[in-house]
Amino acid sequence: MSNVPKYDPLNITLFFLLNFLNIFLENRNIIKIFKIQENVEFKIFVFQFIFNLITFLILPIQIYIALNILVKIFIYKKFFKLKPEKLYMAVIINLILKTISEVMLLIKSKYLIDFNLVSILEVLINLVLFLVIRYKKIEIKITECLNENIKNKIIFISLSLIIFILIAKVKIISDIKRIPMYLYLLFNFMQIAYLIVFIKGILNILDQNNKRILIENLEGSNKRLQENYDSVRAFKHDFNNIMQGIGGYIASNDMVGLNKMYKSIINECQEINEKQSINSDIITNPAILNLINNKILIAEKNGIKIKLNVYIDLNSLNISTFDLCRILGILIDNAIEACSGCEEKVISIKFLKDKFNNRNLIIIENPYKNYLIDIKKIYEKGFSSKKDKISHGLGLWKVKQILKKNKNLNIYTSRDKLFKQQLEIY
Image 1: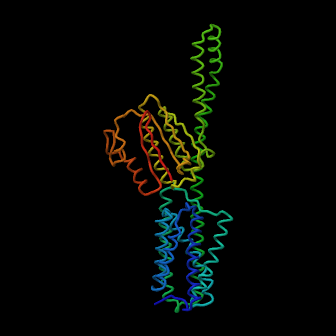
Image 2 (image 1 turned 90 degrees about the vertical axis):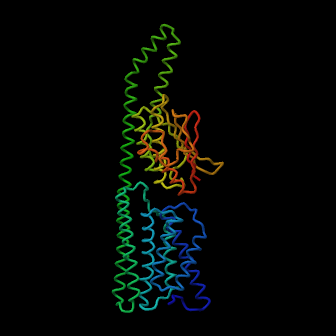
Image 3 (image 1 turned 120 degrees about the vertical axis):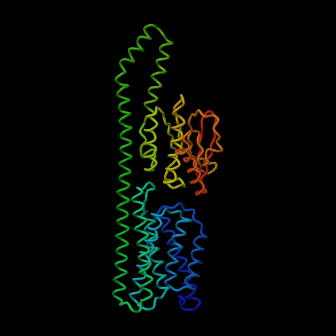
């Protein structure tokens, strides 16, 4: 049983061209909507086109529809590196567009589908969507730090919906000649309406989640601002006493004492300046902003300063926010723990661009006491310098597992006066 259009050279050539254009535009739209890093190779589109073409020519339409969806899921996961909550939403968007084109042309013919006409309409719909996305800059923002419960709900409902629609499509196409036209059209209109309502519902959930993260970030920033304000008030309160002390050294011409007091004043002023609130102007990624603010608060409770220098836009990094949060959290926690037993309690965190090697760097440096630690073994599972190896020794091993899944990531560990972790993002 074949789905081939009429066998004349022009018809076949048009058929091939339209199908390739559809695949290309579909993928470009998904790349733009979900803001995927545009390093997807052209040969992936060619592979998808050839696979779809072969299955379309030799398999019944019902099996072809199912395989087409499975191939999309494979490509979105393997090459686009979409997380499940984005992946299934991308498939649903494609289902909406395909169903719209089918409905419009099946009004013309109930029993015979002109595949070239369907393909032409799909190309036009995808082209319009492409232009709208490009000029209106439409994108679906799904933060990587979604609540796990929300993420699981999105995945479950999306997958269930795809399976249901797939089964219904295959069943209806099998019995198309026995189904009244109005019932078929009604089913498709309901399907489109339900899918659109579903997408809107998910976007509302995501918007609420983004607002929750923003509130958490603001609370963290406000807490740090309050601490800064209290420090300034305390310094102002002591100002008269400080001036009287300075006056005493001047009156007695004690330059040694005056010099010591001057250095103490400078150090305290520097501490106040360093306690600036980390806000969205410095770190534009809300998930990283929340993580860094929380780690700074934990460090300060342990008497540790964190010096932060951000010279790049963290949203432009070629790494998912989810993976970056996991890596940063582990590295900063380790730095805080190593620093807590040292006399000098200062951790340096730098986000910078290495233009010469075309890479972004995240460098974390901290003092440490265990100078005998073997940096070649720290990434092994279960390795820990602590006695309790059951609850420790997994952090850096997890970092290594994340790096294995991302070929554009590398980490360089060194030790000298300071222990240094350098995450390299290409």
